[in-house]
Image (cartoon, rainbow, N blue to C red; front, side, top):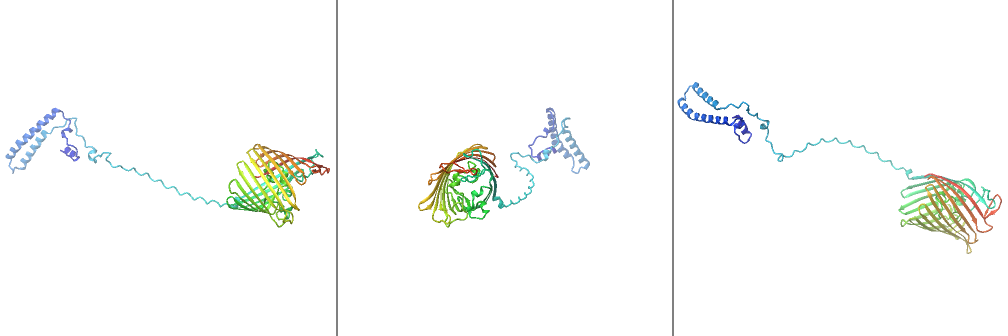
Length: 462
C-alpha cells in the first residue's frame, strides 16, 4: 500500500496500517473474518476456475475474470469510519533525519562585520626649538629711603645734610634713591653669565672711584662668566661679589634696612679675578679666590690676593670660615693685608639668627700693623607673611687706639606683597672714645652719638 511504502522509505519501525484507522474492536473482528473468507475463496475458487478457463479464452472472458477478482477485493476492503481520516504526510517525512544536539558539530557564530579603520591621525607639528632667551632671566628693583638724623647738640634738628661716613648707603639725611638695579643672568648647560648694574646715590659708595676704570664702569656691580664642567664644580671669571660676611648690598636680603658698620668698615665688597668652588658633599663647599685685591677691577700692584673659604650647611645650621690675604697698597707687593671672617647662621623658620666676626691686620712695615676687628649679632622674627621684627647689634674695635664703635638697630618690616618691602629702622651709633664722634655740619659740634630714623621702600620684580 502507498502509506506502508512511504513509511518504509522513511526507515521508521513498522506499524500495522490498521493503526492509522480509527476502528473499534467489533469492526476489527468483522474485517478479520472477511479477510480470512477472501483468502479461503481465492485459494479454492480461483484454481478451480482457472481449470475451467482455457488459455485461449477470448479477451472478454479474461477481462470478466479480472473484474470478478477486483469485485472480491473491493468486498473485503473496509470503508473508513466516518470520522477517521488518514493523516497527511508531514514535512518531517520529507526532511532530513533530525540529529541529536549534543552530536551536532558546533556552528561558528557569524563573524561581526569589521568596523572601518579609523583615519590615521595627522602627525603633530614638531615642537618649536628652544630659543636662547629661554635661558635668560631678568630682574629689576628700585630702593629708596627717607632719613632723619638727630644728635645731642641738635636733638630736634633732623639735619638732612648730616654725613655718617661709617655708614655705607644710608649715609645722607633726607629723601634719596639709593639704588636702581638691573640683574641679568644666562645659563645654558655648563655655561653661564651674570651681569648686575647699579645706579643711584649709593653706587659710588659701593663701587667707588678706586676701580681704576673710566666713568660708566662704576655702575657694574657684577660681570662674570661661569663654567661648570661637572656637577658640584664651578669656575667663575670676572667681577663678582665678595664671599665674606653675613650681609649684602641688597637691603631686602638682610634682617634690617641699613647695612652695618662691620659690613662697611672691615669687609670687602667685591673682587675681580678667578673664583673656584667645589662641593665634595651636599653639606660641604670649598671656595678659592685669585683676585686683584679688595674692591679693584684693575689691580693697583703686581701681586694678587688669594682667598679660601670652607662652608658647612646641615639642616638649619650654616657655618663658614674664610681667609683673604695679599698686598693692598698702591704699588706695594710685599706688605700684605690679612683678613679672617667667620659667619654662623641659624634658620628656624619664622626666626633667623646670624652672627659674624671679622679680623683685619695690614702690615705697615717695621713690625707694626693696622688692626681692626668687629662682631655682629642679628635676628629676625616673622610674625606673619606680611609683618616682621628685627634687631641687630655691633661692635667695631681698634686695638691700636682703643676706640670703638657701637651700633644698635630695631626694624619694623611690612610686606604688602612679595614685590614690595617696607622697613622702618630706628638706629643709634655711638663712639666709646672721648674726642671722637660725629660732626654736625650745621654747628661744627662733634657728638658721640647719632640717632636716625630711616624709612626704606624696595619695589622689585620676581
